[in-house]
Length: 174
Image (cartoon, rainbow, N blue to C red; front, side, top):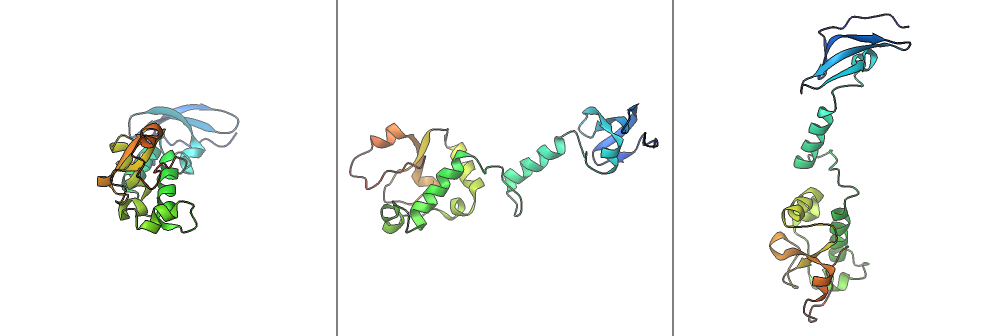
């Protein structure tokens, strides 16, 4: 068994070692309290080498900041979210001449507002705030207008297919 090192009262990131919990064959464990108030038993080595920084609250805080601010270099956590595919298809229709539907979108001068084009998080926030749920497709209210908050809404595919036939294209992106 490794030698016992008393770390009682010492702080390791968000953990404070309260008292020794128990030893075992591979190491010593301490009863610890996180800054958020959560208490748990943590292996001493994980405290000392920084592999355990908190009860999990630190990770939650970091992820919330990443999603809210989308600071450069941070991931947004939306990689597999359905809205990512909807946004990608919308941008592709407007800017990729090889897209099958480009002639009805980018070819007619339809574009995507800068905020949505540059930030998945901005598009996600608008979508959630404006009633998006799984199964809905994005629709431009004015068929000749751009993809932007004031000209877009969410419809079911059935509602979208009931729109007047004079429309040049189907705006689904599911």
